[in-house]
Length: 173
Image (tube, rainbow, N blue to C red):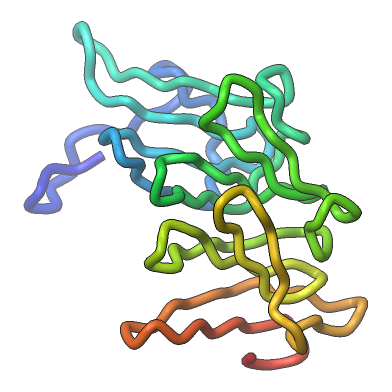
């Protein structure tokens, strides 16, 4: 963590409750928390400095996640947190996590980076193509499915609202 001027104040780790050093994504939420997606420990939500120490809350398979590997994080307009995991998506924000898997509407495995759509939903890539989560549903954009050995792994929403998706081998959509 650093102050607003960029001066390093502290390095938070296992002694502070953050036990995984392989972080894939960081994202603030609507309540001032910071979500950290990790390779082997699920996600951590950093809630700041309380009672003389930094506080992290951990979410893993025991909390209802599909597995311990989280590739990306997105926050919807309503404050729900979506986690991109190898098997599919996990939505946090209800009393019980909700999963979106291939066969349940998710167009493919390996959801990746997520970006807000500007209307309360999220764009993300999968092995099945560019997808959008909105109002509890997942849809795929026709014509964006990469080859079977490819995956859309980067998504960008431009200032004019257009969405770009880059696949590992198929180029830019």
